[in-house]
Length: 158
Image (cartoon, rainbow, N blue to C red; front, side, top):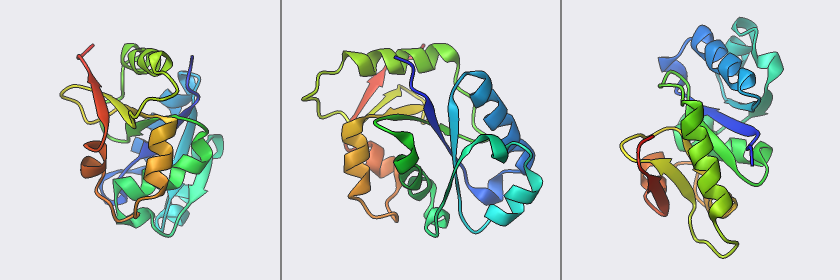
């Protein structure tokens, strides 16, 4: 099962429009839909990034609160599950993405796993349908690393 939506999270002060363009291009070349959450920096990025026209855009007043708030805002566009990748981080190898997708397919409907990640890596990770429901109930002020600790299954490095 190929998961189409990929939420691209970033800290605006730490990236350039070119960083975002490269991540969007790689995501689209992999056959996935980039989901980009824009906050106050939206106008600047929209004028500087030629790739944002090829994305699912979400605008949020809470995007500036951190990586979790960006991810949470993008969940509505993600569908039943999504991959989460950090802009300016190491772009995930296709083998990593396939391993996350494969493990997701193996989960039964009663699972309590919110996230599937790879040991020793913060990104990428997959957020399950149960994880989406869980995250929507949390404050946008939540810390992403703390949230991930709630129920994550870590796969061996690929």
